[in-house]
Amino acid sequence: MPVVLPPGAGYLGKSRRRISASGLVTWERCPRQWHYRRRIGLNDATVPEMIIGLVVEDALCGLYMERLSADGGVMAGRSSWVDFSREEGGLEPSEANGEVAITDLASVGAWCDLVIPALVAEIQRILRVRWEKVTWKAIGRDIEEVKDYRIENLVKGGIALQIEEVANCIGADGGPYLADYREGGDPFSVPAPCWSEKPVKPAENSGRAAAAGFESEGTVTAWEAWEIARPWVKDPRVEEPQRLFHPDGWGAGEMDLVHRWDGTVRICDIKASAGTSGYSSGLIGQLRFYQWLWGVTRDLDDRPTGRVVEGPLSGLEGWYLSGPFRKMVDLLDDETLESEVERWLNTHEQMTSSGLHPSDLAPADPAPWVNHAPGGNPLPVTDEKAAKAITCERCTGAAYCDAAPELARTKALANLASPDISDSSKLAETLTPISPCTPISEIPRRLHVKGTLKGHWGPLANHFGEEVRGATVVVGSTNVVVEEMGAQSFGEIPEGEDFALLDVAPGQWRRMTRLYLDEHSTVKPAAEAGDVEFTRLGLIPTRANLSGMVVSRGGMKGVNARGRQWSMETCHLWDGEDVIEVVAFGQSIGRTFQDLRVGDRLRVLAGELGWRDGVPQLRIDSRQTRLEVNSPE
Image (cartoon, rainbow, N blue to C red; front, top):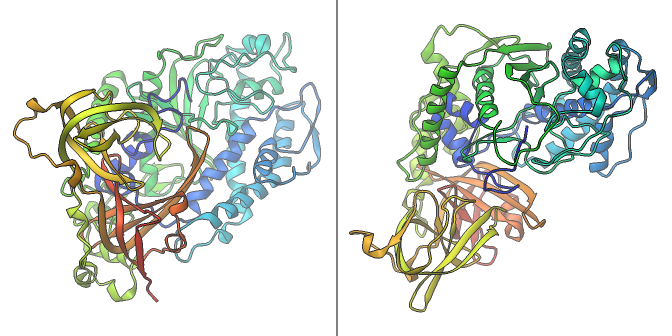
């Protein structure tokens, strides 16, 4: 639930090093897995389950946003979310599936039953659209295997859990805020989104009035209970990030549901499963991370105001839709939570340093894989070593992790490589770079320069859409652009003569030399730099020739701070020792790059050296970079 705008980074700010609940869960599963998955952005082959949960959650949140007809009014069996989604896809609205008069809780359930077929159909449509856009699909998996009954079961589970909330609200005679809702509608500073109300952006005051349908007095009605028990959810009409941000920017979390109707606050997370897999182990840590973020964002300046003050945080819940099940998670006491925060901050510092140099990787320390009974209840682990091996087998980076068990490496490699090099003993010979290509580990990570700093600018959007500051370092007739590696990753850049820029990252953008500053860089008077070796501006390395095997594919699109569309495609290249991300932006996404597949052998000649959150990238220059592809038969 947003309270203010993201700190420093603007609407589009995003950092791979900002600790999130999901990132923390990955780290605790294994820090090395976090490095491969989060730090350098390696993707897994997409399976339908990766898409199902997101779309079902969106559909349910859209259903919770409905406003029903009041006072026995007839409600058509049509979903506002379905019509919104179809409009986004350029399609005509759906047709109503009958109608029902809203008179009691049973009629609310009857209306939900009417819209289930349309919800299922729209979810399936979106699943197929998204599946078609997936760059890397898991072998042997297809979206056609997702049957309607599976989606219907998940949707019904989400409806049943919310109907329970409405029933409890009726049992509590509307709860402590009944009079406030009757007087002026949703009274909270961040209101629960509703299709019949104007969307409210982060940090924006809602100015809502009472909706027609609230009674002036008397026992709470089913219609009122639906309105009061409506949770806060992400509003699909709002483009800005709808998450909690730590005031210092190092942590963020995006919650699914927040219930506030009973005078307290309960944070709920939706899971499109029965909670039986080993991934269910992360729910408790995820929700307790939200507990902490909720506490540190209550007293921020510039947050919107409401007519009532939210009650204390009283509970954490996991909603497993296949069942459905509620898993109740105990809140941490203040002392334990303080200890956890110290551990999380230490974790964030380790995340920040992971990968700054080729040898500085997060440690390989897999947690045991724990299976669960339905509802997310852990089962005992009888063989810890075997359970850790299972975690490794499910790791994004098992093929290239030197600490992974041989069996896990072999299985992972078989999913990536062609049969002629699936034997790990052949890898070194097969993937060893041949001139003019060099090993990924030899890419220069940091260097020192000195000169005059001038020509300051900022904030200005970089190619990722982040607002960054920059300047120019000048020596004689040579000048080089200096900019922050990401939004507020360095801070104010001084201005004047004879400055030393220490531990800066070299690179190039659009055939122009760049130097990137982050929190590991230092700018000070050259006289205070000590005994360091400076690189001449004209000798800054800006390009690299690399080769290896494509081990991951991905991409994304968006709109930058100026409202302009942008797009990027990525692959990851492995040379048998190290992995690097290769990126193509916009018009540099040529046919050759688009056709890359996992398992291809690739040589990138004259790629631009770039950086993302402290680790190197190789960027494609459409005019100068050459790609040579050897695809397996």
